[in-house]
Length: 338
Ligand code: NAD
Ligand code: UDP
Ligand code: UDP
Image (cartoon, rainbow, N blue to C red; front, side, top):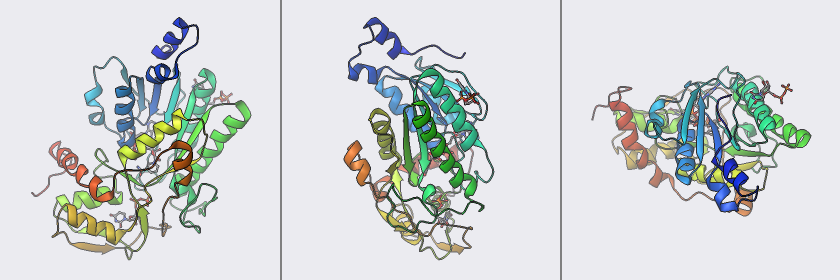
């Protein structure tokens, strides 16, 4: 057993189990799987700032200690190197389950989504914790409905190169709903659309990190295919706000969490030119297999039931990545020719 009940539990006991909502919300013990990654580390910062105790469980597959180093020494923070494919015993009030290789470059074969999610649901069941799954817009596959609403069932190739991720997350949603319906576990499901910001892994192959790194290195921006495919890009602080509202709210979901601003990859390249380097060149490369042609969230449900919508536009958010990417370069990952 790694830890004991958190401050929220102790406070509740002192008050005979009756805790004012505001106080309870501030003193929880929370596990964030994948908390050393891009989204997870920003979430951890917000939870710690709110007064919670946070345990990060991460195997550092794509995450980095550097993303959390500023929390080391904080008595309300704990970091455990662990692969969620293996069972783990913890005593917590909430589970944010993010652990998963999220970039197409990394997820080609990995059982994290299914086995890791099962273990975290088992944990939620044993300790009575609330469980939030970070699912993905990829569950819609190459969508035949546009924009995508949560009621759309998707168009996914079950045997394609992306299916380990798409189908893995779809199975994770199924497991979550089965534990909810069958065992009464409190679950929350977020379907996250493309998200960017500081602490993205500079070499993880996703389009925003690629373009920003390429612009800083004075290399051509690599547009795959004809560049007319679309995505909708959300800044990370907007996503973290949405995840926390979802966890604290009363609705299971699934909820689309994304920015409805839709861009072709060529338009994205132009924005990167505008905000980072007007002289950056564009180079066309062959596209990857099964690449979804378009993607844009319908966020009416999150607006109505969570009172949430993104506030950071792409032109405001992109420049906020630049100093972090330069910093990652100084740490020896890449050298920019500036
Ligand atoms: P990331 O790669 O930065 O973070 C994932 C973290 O999980 C990393 O720290 C990694 O080391 C850890 N991890 C991977 N496999 C693990 C395992 N078996 N055991 C323990 N830890 C493990 O990715 P991210 O962008 O921060 O994504 C976080 C979550 O959000 C993922 O579940 C992802 O599927 C989901 N999501 C992200 C986006 C996006 O655009 N960033 C979009 C849709 C969904
Ligand atoms: N599990 C875990 N931590 C816990 C409780 C369960 O990692 O605190 C794992 C457990 O090892 C199992 C999975 O979660 O592989 C599902 O657990 P559950 O109790 O739901 O299923 P069962 O073990 O009864 O098949
Ligand atoms: N893409 C691109 N250049 C790159 C990397 C990706 O044009 O250097 C394209 C890719 O083909 C896809 C889109 O950008 O159409 C988004 O890709 P990403 O891997 O970022 O996310 P996902 O496909 O999971 O939405």
